[in-house]
Amino acid sequence: MSELLARHRAVIPNWVALNYNEPIEIVSGKGNRVVDADGKSYLDFFAGILTNMIGYDVPEVREAVERQLATGVVHTSTVYLLRGQIELAEKIARVSGIPDAKVFFTNSGTEANETALLLATYARKTDQVLAMRQSYHGRSFGAISVTSNRSWKNNSLSPLNVHFLHGADRHLTQFKGMSDADYIAACVDDLRHLLATAVSSDVAALIAEPIQGVGGFTMAPDGLFAAYKEVLDEQGILFISDEVQTGWGRTGSAFFGIQNHGVTPDMMTFAKGLGNGFAVGGIVARGDLLDGLPAVGLSTFGGNPISMAAANATLDYVLDHDLQANAARTGKIILDGLHEAARRLPIIKGVRGKGLMFAVELESPAQCARFMEETKKAGLLAGKGGLYGTAIRMAPPLTLTVEEASEGLSIIVHALETIAQEAAAAQETDNAEAATQ
Image (cartoon, rainbow, N blue to C red; front, side, top):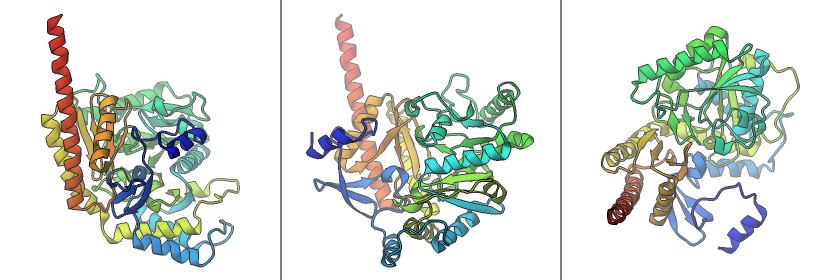
């Protein structure tokens, strides 16, 4: 055990997970690569859990932050006008597509989702909320209550009355083999039945990730949320799209994940990639909803001058360089390669994703752990997750080049081939032992 790892374990809670048998310390980064304390370089296909959205040491972001630091003002609070906050809110309101939108800034996606739930329950005067099975929306008390993944729930207590919907669980027996249209119809029927049987009064909102992050990048088929929204609109139920991982063009096919469904939600929450590593989160919503709260409110650090400088520069970079198109282009290279590998490697139980947000479903958590070690050895950083711990999930920076996409794909496929060979050899050994008994 390294000296730094021993110190970590002595003072950091044991539920703060570390990747790899021998965890690494990242000490520098440039572009889409990082270097660890031993001097080993890695192509980063996880981007600090989808947070370093345009890579490392980006001059435009660094210079924007340095300009703000040079003023001597790191914090003033929201009781004063914040030019950077106003400018960023204007940009987000414009690209959101939400009519008469306003924006409130927080420090994280968890805080953003808490704000959205507060807005919805106040506006609708009810604590009943709909969420998706396999979802994850943060680690706070309220966010955990709308999280539907047992590995990430610390208790059954909840400030909300939550009902969970189908929509990203096509692996279940009752849905296997269904077409998208039939699956959507079955899910909508279930929603209508739930509203007729399980709820006792008005429902505040549905909160949903267009692509489930912790869920292993499982997703509803395009069009499901549009069909859900038709039902919600009949009863005035609000729709919250959690864009913490799917926002800013990452899916390639839309700037926000929910737009793949042809839906304009009442609220969208965001965080992670917008600050390219600086802490920023927030909510963009209809102005009447954000204006509707009766009590005074603020976020001490939300929208502070430093994070706003970084976020403004990051969003400008994404838009100026059309990184949504780049996500579509480079993501296709990787997803096409993964689908080809799946056809010949039986350990791959599924490939899914959009743009630069993709996952490989393997047979077991042990194979996922093996994949992590193989790709680390080859110089690539990845992530893992999924409801059953059997998904490898990857989301490189949106600045990934075609050459880097091909390089990363080669490392991934080689690791999968190695694991497949090991699985085949183990099966042969088991068969031979069984034959001698």
